[in-house]
Image (cartoon, rainbow, N blue to C red; front, side, top):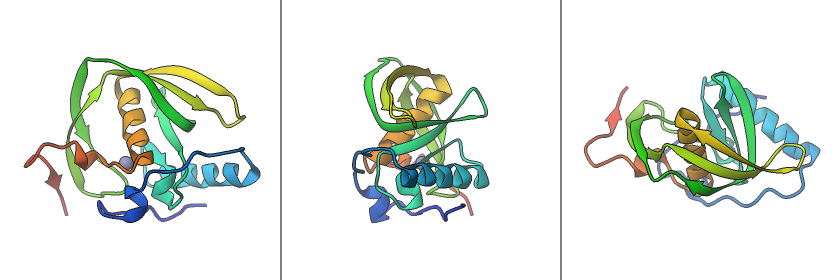
Length: 155
Ligand SMILES: [Zn+2]
């Protein structure tokens, strides 16, 4: 089911730190499916649960160009010192774009949809999406990282 994306830089749902997801139930899987449907409908490359109005630590990211990958209770345990700057946008801030510096790789601990804990390294664009989505779960938005005067707003 496609859910309307929660929008606005000052929206309290987007600004709240989310709670850990506990046991993965049918309800959890339904929420993940709704997040996936909403991400596809809006052509996003990632989505976090707060963006569909739920403050739980879950997100989908795009890997291998077009594969949707689920991360539950993600935690960045290590990250590259080297950073890269690229333009970011967000489904919750339509028409907003700006340069954001991110680590070029991150080592992520997370739980998969079967409840198994995993550790994986993400690089480049995937690492950028991971950092963007983990920010969402901590109540942060990409615009917080955009230097003053560099935010572009269209429409
Ligand atoms: Zn976003």
